[in-house]
Image 1 (cartoon, rainbow, N blue to C red):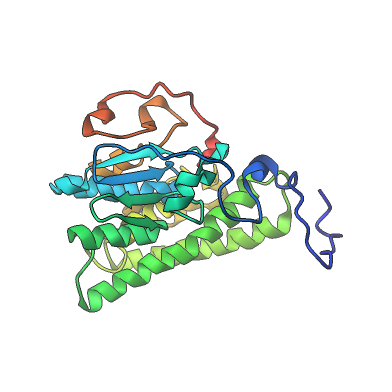
Image 2: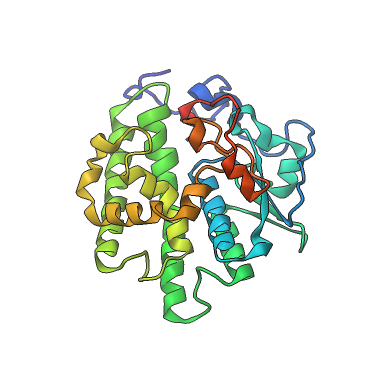
Length: 291
């Protein structure tokens, strides 16, 4: 890899399939499927195709929260999509999400596909009538924070997380640039949570469900091994919020679903019934970099 201090972009960019480190084999500049494969189908109306990354956790936490409220229609089958093996590029998956990113949801009751994690949360909130005010200022404020998360998280994951934890070489400029932005984002959240119990108000909502897997895990020291580096202990309001949400049983269940790495007790690669949480996964753990 070239020294970034001397690198000059070419007049026309060309794809170097070997450049990009561990994930180079699944990153490419074109869309569409790479192989033919049919997606599995379970017994429930909601079919989720995902992996237990922060974006995947958003949806499984939401579904578990709905089930905890007694919404039996929120029963779901969660099928593991191994993104490190390129399963998101199958013909079946691309039919559900042409962007080839997890999570993707198929509602067999309505025949609708839903992709992008924020869109799935909004769809489920409106379908079941929970975690989203129906109208007025409270709904507007909540949506502010939901879309804040959707716009901000890429700076944390694809920006900071990539260059700090996963890039094949470490360079000062991108790490400093994204560290500054992530700390600014945590300060934004910390200031908001100094005024309210939850994002956008005092009621738990899809804004919190969307944000916790990214910034909750981060401030609790569970992401990228960067807790000390980012001085997460200083964001007291954000930590209070993150700890309170982690205590919710539905969150504890949802963060395990479609997870096939780490401690066996925290893994549930596939979920087809509530009883699955009582069974320990026998799948071989995947690298921590899957986070």
